Image (cartoon, rainbow, N blue to C red; front, side, top):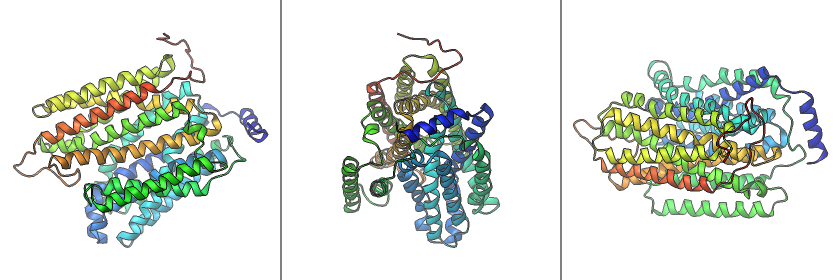
Length: 493
C-alpha cells in the first residue's frame, strides 16, 4: 500500500466514528437503498394508468427494462469509482443521478421521455445498491458485519410490499407522477443524514484511475445480455434471429471486455479480485441463489391465483410468508456467523433445507392447501435467507480495503444479473408448458390452469438452488477479521 493510502488510514484512525455517527450513516444509506429498491416495484401497478395518460402503451415494458438495464450495468463501475475517489462523493453522485432521473420521469410529457428518465434513475439506483453494502463494509469489520444483514433484507422486503401498494394507490387515487416526486425529499433527507459522518471515511486508493474503455465495454455487454433475457420468449422466440443476434453481439463485447481486463494498465475490475477463489465462488453462488429466489417470487403469485384461486390482492398478502421468511433467515444467519468458525455451514444447511422444501412444494403443488403452501414458502425463505449474509461477508472479507468497492460491486452486479436470468429461465419453462408469462395474466373466470407448468417451475428453482449449493461448497473459508463482544466460537471443529 502506498504512502498516500497509509496517510488516509492514519487520518481515519485519528478521527474514529462514534456509534451514533455509524448508525446515522447506515440509516442514511439504507434510506437511499430503499428508494432504489422501491423504484423496481412501485411502477408496475401504475403502468396501465401511465399508458392511458402518455400513450404509446406498447413501450410500457421499457419503463421497467430501462431501469433494470442501467442499474445492473453500472454496479461494478460504482464500486471502482468509490475505491478511487471515496465513498461520500460517489454516494452523493449516485443519489443526485437517481433524483435527476426521478425529476425527468415525474415531468415526462410522453412515454419516450419517461423511459429516458427511468434509465437515468437506474444509473443512480444501481450505484446505491452496491455502495450501501460497501459503506457498511467500511464501518464494521467482517465478523460484526453479518449482523446488519437483516437490515438489508428488511429493506428489500419493505420495498417488495410497499412498492406495489404505493404505486397502485398513487395511480388510482392521486397521480402517477407522485411515484417519482416522492423520491426528491427522501433523497435529500438521506444526503443530509450522511453528509457530516461520511466525511470521516478515508479514500482507499486515491492515486488510482478509472478505465473508461473497460467501463463502456462492460455497460454495452451487460445491456445487450439483459435485452436478450427480457425479449426472449416474449417479444421474440428464443431461437429467433433477433435474440441470437443480440446474444452474439453481447458475447463479442464480453470478449472485448475480458481482453481489456488482461491488457489494461489498471483494469476496471482487478484481476486479483476476479482471481480470488472466495470472490469467484461467492459471487457465482449468489448469482444462482438470486436466480432461484426471484424466479420463485415472480411465479408464486401466478400459482396462487391460477391453481389456488386467490385474487391478486390475496396473493400479494400470501407472498408475505416468503418475504418474512427471507428476512428471518438473513437475521438468524447474521447473528450466528460471528459465533461459528465454519460459518459457511450456516448457508449450506439453509440451502439444503430450502431445496427440500422447494422439491416438496413441487410434489404437492396439485393438491396442497393454502396453509401448506404458506408453510413451505416460509421455510424456503428461511433457508435461502441464510445465504445472503454468508456470501456478502465472505466476499468482502476475502479482499483488502482498497478492493472492497470493486468486490461488492461485482457481487451486486451478479445478484442483479441472476434476478434477470432466473425470471427468463422460469419464463421459458412456463412458455414451454403453455403457461403465459408472469404479468400477462393467467387467471380467467371459470378456468384453472394446469399444475404441470408450476411443478416444473418449482423443480427448476430447486435445481438452481442445488447448483448454488455446489458452488458454495467449493468456496474456501477465510477467518473473519474483527471482533465481537463474545468472541468464543462454537462448532470450532
